[in-house]
Amino acid sequence: MINTLETKITRDPSGKKLIVTREFNAPLEKVWRAWTESSLLDEWWAPRPYKTETKSMDFKAGGRWLYVMVSPQGEQHFCKVSFKSIEPQKSFTAIDSFCDENGNDSGIAPSMHWYTRFQTAGDGTLVTVEVSFDSAADLEKIVEMGFQQGFTMAHGNLDELLAKY
Figure 1 (cartoon, rainbow, N blue to C red):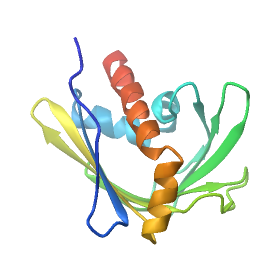
Figure 2 (cartoon, rainbow, N blue to C red):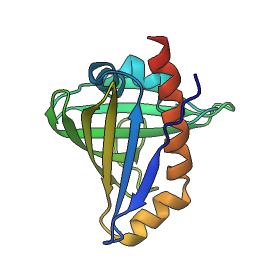
Figure 3 (cartoon, rainbow, N blue to C red):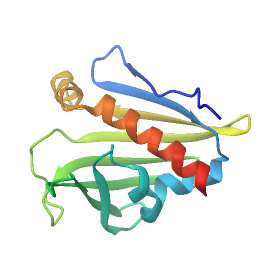
């Protein structure tokens, strides 16, 4: 089956927010698990040929996910997601930032404030992610770093994962 679903990324008129929408051909429970369980995130989160390796994850309000994206050459980019609120199988909010191996902010890129929502859409699931920034310049820096291409590629990885399990 050819997947005709696509990742759509638009900019909010404020210039400080990206809105990402994507439908997946899988039930909400499956998609939620893929976004919130480290063993599944490790299979799709990084754009290929990078891989994601979870160092620790505590998916709860006040918890965090510490992971590293590893290039084929072994170069490591550590990131952390600090969870602020969670409404099971509906939404979560978090702050995503680059960090060192201990989770200390590195300052190499702006922090991103994520509001991720999940809703049933026919036989599938619609995921809407609002990624907010402190300034329009911060948004531009993340876009220049390849956010749109990387997140779109990761969604393709997620399609493959959802078809397998």
